Length: 392
Picture (cartoon, rainbow, N blue to C red):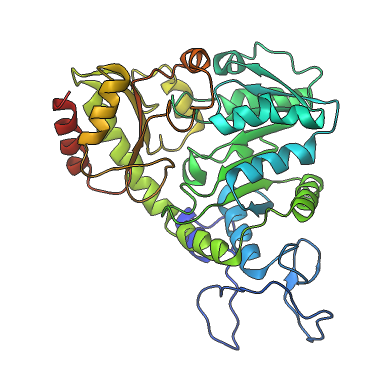
């Protein structure tokens, strides 16, 4: 599919494996561990990562390749690669691009597991990590000297601060240092970091890409064949390739990503505006609000402001727990980006591994609620939220 086609058209048609012999209109699930080798067919399907017929699913699988082609089209990159989880994509990218004795420079405001991976786990492999604040990164008040790569989340979890990847990407290109961007919260519908100079784009495909809370998946995209080959080598060696069924479900979910995320953008904006004037809400984090200190940056680097809203309720941790227990529509569950609304407390889930003082430095108070907007009607969600806040 030509990348000149619109997003939704590419979402439906890019990467599909159609075989006239069967007349199928969607890519089949090739739930097979191995393939005939040698393949004596006169015209075999080719594993594009190797330029040869498919051999073994840990090396490559047609269903998975279909997913990766669709993702690359929507992300606007030449090469896409899938992994068994978002953390598998992140760790594989780091191991593909860093060696013992090298150091990473990352923003400090990270998803908790990523922060733990950078701050402690990488030490086992002789890879160090230095941290800077997101505002320090946005103002370019850092020296990349001595670092092998820069790492960002384009929308910060859960405070929804916005990385100025346009400015940082330009700076990294000038300095010749790779930029890795986790754009999970944005989704390819709202943002393509490679357009701003990101060397590798990362996603937890579990979220907006799959969109139905039934898949665990990671994605990575790049325009560099060399980096793609290095990522591929790590994946083959360590083995975190998704099962073909997971690939099929993710590709199916991706077909409606534009429709889902467009609706989630609208729902989140309406909820954020409602919360912003509620007397029992201390503060609201949403980059689409004019009052957001990151609104100006968001207008430049995002096509939509996303389906995530976080807000601090009165009463601290006790108040937040009571609010969540009073909700009727959203499920109280970790994760995000699905068609159903989900609500969670970052201090008890995504950032529970970070000490309290570290969380406060990131702007994560005990009463901060993270709300992942689904595709329910916004007024129903607002009514539910209003009732739950009245219970405080």
